[in-house]
Amino acid sequence: MSETQHNLSTSAGGRGYLVDYFQTKLGRYDFTRYIRDRLAADFACILSQHLTKEQAETDNMRAELQALRADRTAGWRCFHCGEHFLDEAAAALHFGTHEMQSPACLIDVAEYREMEARMRSYNDEDAEIHRAMARQRTQHQLELRRAEEQGYSRGLKDAADAMERQQSLHQLELSRAEGLGYSRGLKEATEQILDKQMQED
Image (tube, rainbow, N blue to C red; front, side, top):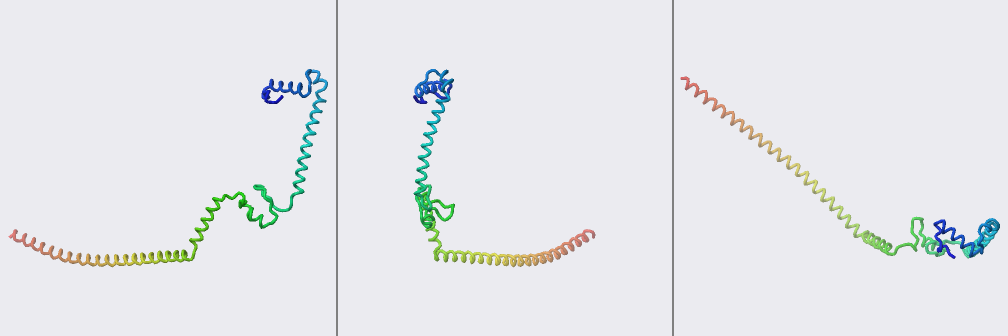
């Protein structure tokens, strides 16, 4: 008899399982009289057998654990790979020196190689020649900026001088134009007055 023969999710299946259990395991067919007379005693007997079996399993596990404890020596054991370290330096090499580091058994080799390549690239870029080139580039940029600023200042000065010259030329032209305008205006006014007088005479 097995639980798979009966659908235990239904009441009928559960009853069928109990009937089979009582008939095969206990050899009982008259349930009413059995429940009234012997159920408690049989239940106690089955429970006792079950607990005895459980106790034997517990005692076996306890003995195994005690054997493991007796075999255990001081040190560190990695619960990822099971390796045991007696030396603090070896444990630090495997586990790392602080809790944020991954144990050596969990480190991905591809990721580690990438990190090595980045470090090698960083060290290559940090050679004296690279620092000298960086200084030279910086100095070149500063000199270029100074030259641009000097050119800008010179351009501003030249523009101011040109505007001043332009303004003085403009003033000179205005004064000439004024002079010409005055004398021309005077000449025209005189001619008009003379023309009027001639017409009146």
